Image (cartoon, rainbow, N blue to C red; front, side, top):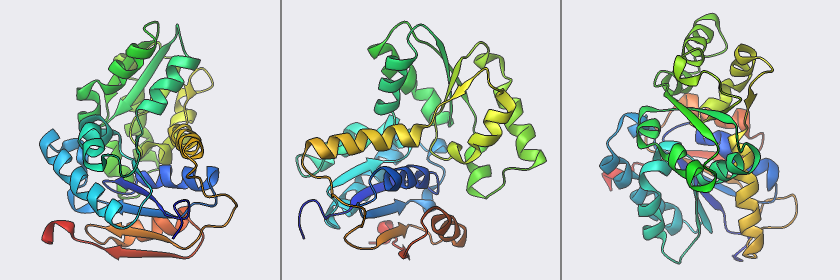
Length: 272
């Protein structure tokens, strides 16, 4: 198989990374995707940094062993806690992309001198990864952060776009930690699934950013620069989705995102 025809490897703790995978499909329609959802250990936001690093290293080796030409950490918590370990594991075999750095660069370039809010899991917010990454690039951006731990489990269970979910989302968005924000980063890859509800609650005064699209454009640019982008609009084969704990809800979500032939298979890495 040619180097460009090899799949892009993507991993997350559940369905959230599908938002990134779907954006990669839109921006790179010729690419084949290999996705690993670590549903056995969901949610990563509640796990220790040591556990997340352990999971990320094992998954990275799995994706590379399956012939992936790149690894995308489609999880904010894993990006915050395990990027260095994933890069060390990958070495010079394949490039590694996370979801934090492209967003931090976008905010630094587009929102200098403004106040930007970030919502995410406990692990992501506690790591202050967005505060550090944005400040390193543009100190004039004021970052306001808030942990929103109920959102990812709610979304994973498909429990959104209803009266109760809107009340939970509104309660978070009206928290004083986010007061004065002019833009909002959805700092968990699950959260784009509730973007419409967030926009309705915030109104036109706050710009809700589109992290999956920002990440996908970054990955495309990097692969193109490396001569690894698969040209054309037709992938060289079917997308393949692996789960550490098979879930019917995941399969339904995957088919909703990707209206083409796919395989969803259980792969219990920690039993091997």
